[in-house]
Amino acid sequence: MDHSLVMTVLGPDRPGLLATLSATIYSHGGSWFESKLSRFAGHFAGILRCDCPDERHDELVKALNQLEGLNMQIVKELNVPHRIVKHLNFDVHGHHHPGIVRKISSIIAQIGGNLEELSTERDAAPQPGHFLFRTVGCVAVNDDFDSNLLEHMLQELGSDITVTVEDPSSAATAA
Image (cartoon, rainbow, N blue to C red):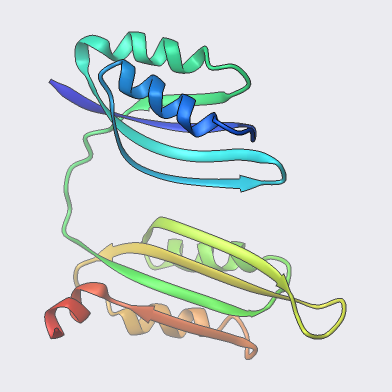
């Protein structure tokens, strides 16, 4: 029976790194399932999930851990009991100030949400010495959660912040 492996990968970026990683997974019977990969400050950083036959699990993990120059953490997928949830996508942008990610994550914890995805970036603003930030993410909440509450709480972060919260399931239903 196949099961999924979830792994983080970090190491100095170099040509062919992704080809080596994907070839290692494939040569041990694995199938690349999903990933988020980026280059940060000269380093390759990623999180990915692949399926692997149970009988080849140990040899795949050993081969992955032997890839030169990569630090990896590999775990088996957890069987988490399913609970009825809906997903809300959010987009927060405005002038950068310290602690913004802490405040956003605190709000998500306060509403009982589970952060499923988060992407942040900071860019120079037109005014010298100032920066703009953007945080885009997806949060899982109870099925009866009112998305307007999350939008309201995020808007309380400041008057210079623009917030959008969308329920993709309601957009799909309306289409």
